[in-house]
Image 1 (cartoon, rainbow, N blue to C red):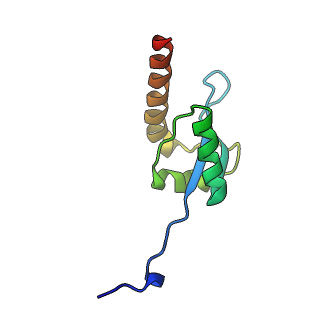
Image 2: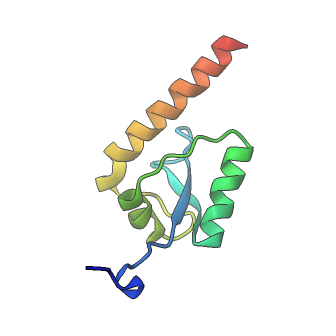
Length: 98
């Protein structure tokens, strides 16, 4: 049986950018977010500047609901901590290579 193209709901991509400064922030903050073309531009800009991009649609949906400059809620600490630990390890490897 062929599916009607209207049956498939295509997901519109989401993106969110975070910033965390352990000296001044209690938790990471949302610095940018977008849907569709805006999401694509956020991802493109991140890659252009060598910022690692983590694909996680469930996390992106949750972050998208937050306001710009809003700290992430406690229930996201573990997920974000794992991502930040990975990013920091990449930064260390890059420094070791230089």
